Length: 79
Length: 241
Picture 1 (cartoon, chains in turn blue, orange):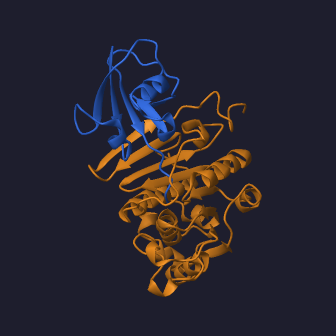
Picture 2: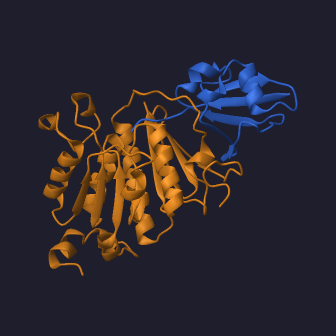
Picture 3: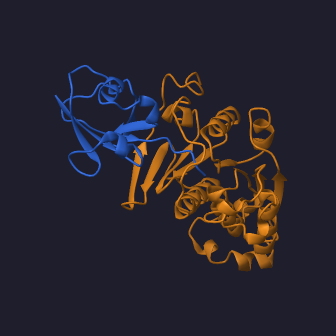
């Protein structure tokens, strides 16, 4: 199945977008968690502060379905 | 009671329907961290007439702070931020009571700092202290107005657990973050003002747009997104409440 991952801030360079400036198309197997998928494409889940789909936060144990668009955001700690 | 001077000073904002200046005057707000975020929120909360501002920061002003920390100037370098902020507030609005704490927040002092406050404002520059404040906010049932920045990216939200999610519902404490982050000075200014706006609305009893939600601002493409932050049933802070 295909899902689309988007990334904000510095995570974009780690994601290597290939669809547009923000988005990477990822082919993955059904049943995999977001954590598994990130690890599979070489992104350490510890670099992801949170993720969301349809304006709602999803956890790293979320299991995406075909066509999902999930946005990843990096840790932001400055003040 | 508002004095005639105060009525004059706040006359423009008192034209807003539902504005209650007396409530702002009676309020105590804790601002932890007087960096880019804290400078912006403090200045506008003082200007708006929040009666008592409790400022907490153990740091002194450095030259590299001056691109974003607008309470200070060249002559502030080497001086404590709380002292300089206090002086600036006194010039801007002498009726504001400023309580100054030259300490860095930690699990030992957070409880005392937050006691008696209506709102806690996050002006911190690290995740560890934010989690300490978040926990205290939950313990004392005080809303936590979160803000954070990195480069052109900024987050803002209002957490009031157990009614809403808390910061630890959104992100786990093991995520990797940097100590010395890049910051475009404008980003904390903008996020700090959004935080100040949410504080004022909370005190006035109006809907706070970011309650249980997170604003994600990206200055590179000027995008604003708001997402819902649901409670995490496995949250180490607020799940059992």
